[in-house]
Every structure is written in C-alpha cells, then in structure tokens.
Image (tube, rainbow, N blue to C red; front, side, top):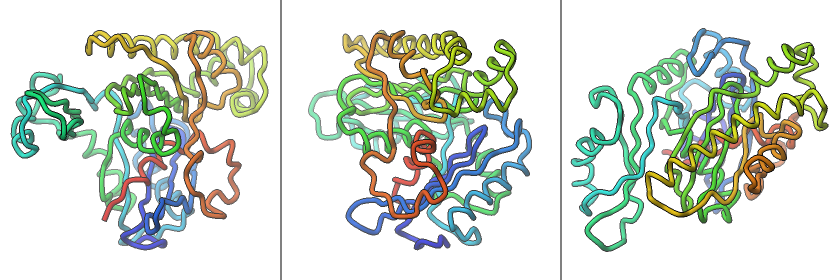
Length: 350
C-alpha cells in the first residue's frame, strides 16, 4: 500500500528516456494536493526512441524513484502510468447520436474506418464530447493504442514489482495538469508542446479537448549532441548550457536550427487539424513543457518563428503543494519536467 493512504492518493509514474519521475497527489480533501515528487536519472541508452533496451535498469530506476517518493512498493495501489507515441492514435470523429452502450458496440467498426492498425491488436476507448447536445450526430474522441505497447509497459512494471491501477495516454495526462493550472487556455486552438529527452510531443487542443497529437523525433539529447559535434563542447559544457539560465552564441546557433524543426512540426499539426475539421480557427497560443522547455532562448525562438505567444506551462501554477513536497529539488528547474507525472497523479483511482 502507498505510504500516504491507500485509496485517496494517486501516484503518477512517468518513465521518460532520460528520467523517471514520480508525483504523489492526495485527493482526500476538497482540492488535490501535491505531497511528494521524486526524480531519478536513467543510464544513457536504457531507453532509445521510446524502446526499452535494458528492462532491468529501467525497473531499478522505477523502484528507486518510488522509494524516494516515500512509497512502499509491496502491495501498493493507486499507481497510474501512461503510453504514447506513434502507436497511439487520438481522433475526433462524428457518429450517429446513440446511447453510450450502443456507442461502445459501434466503436470497433468506427475504429476500422479511422485507425491504421489491425483491430485485433489494439486497445480501444472513447469519450462522448457532447453528451447533452441535440442533433442527429455526436462528437466522439476515439483512442486506440497498440496492445503490445500497453503490454510492454505492464511487463516493465511487473519487473519493478508494482501493478498499475490505470494506464492512461500521455496526451490526456498532460491535458489534466494543463487544465488545472492554465484554465484560460481551454478556449480556442492551443498547442501544448512537451519537449522531452528524445522526442517532442505536440498536442493540439480545441476548446480544451486534446484532439490531435504528433511526435517530432527531436529532444534535448539532440541539442546536446549538436553542441558537442558542431560547437566543440564537452558533454558537461553542453549540459551546463542546456540546463542553465543564460543564453549563449553556441546555444543560439543550435536553437536556430532545431527550433525551426519544432516550429514546423507545430505548424503541420495545426494545418492538418484545420484541413481535417474544415475549421477556420487558427492556433492562438503555444505552451511548452518538459525538460527542453527551460532551454534558454528556445521559447523566444519559437515565438519569433511562429509569430505567436509562446510561454512555459507551469504544472504548479494553481496546484496546492504541501511543504516538503519538492524537498531537495529546485522548483524552477524541475517544474517543467512535472506536467506529465502530475497529470497522471491528478487522476483519482480506487
């Protein structure tokens, strides 16, 4: 059982390519409260392009992070993790207005029309977006994940000695934290861009609903390699610039190129949404999170390139935080890393 109470506490576990992050949220009171955060680094190449290369090392890191968060692993409950990437499809569709049980029966047939996977190899879920509306059709958010992706995550957690209460989708977990902390961003078309170690996830929200995700295979690792190869820096010097607070000519040169790639990915995602939905709504703002969000100069470069307001999303902006929750961690440094684990932990599970 969890140290902080079995049923009213949720443990969000985010297994990234460079770090394992844990956030623990207490749901026992009127508003959720973040009570503990733990971050454990992963050895290089333990996870490459989302694929686990060394399950033993990753399982050890998961156990270490949970222990650091004060979690008793044996018999623990309330753990939520997530899957994401190209093997997860999120799509907003229109179907005949029916009751939810009928929609559940229809969904596999509908998925065959919209999901480019073998239906025998996927896990499906959906949410009706306008249950109280009238009319002959209703909007449904369809989610499909390859079963092998979910099973691989479950095997890893079994190796670590834990059993999740739920497996979420990255985009929805990010949305949970984003909605709580940036409620004014729940109108119009907005991009939430999670810049990770190896991959940048682009999530497009329309009126607060995450309806499109795209991945760009570019993250902080690529920028570090650029600084070493093209600018002649050591790994330590490169990390110092990426994790520091000041801009530098070396970093600006790399950001000019890599920022363009991220900006193009955002533009393409927004353009695809506009063409697919035949909507005239334009992307009005971009929010960044993840370890890459705090790279000096990157937000400014994206804002200039996109001609939009670009700002860091803060998963602690409106969230109640218990004293000591971030003990030994520098809040400004770790906050951008916490959007996903906090989003997972915001989910109530029995």
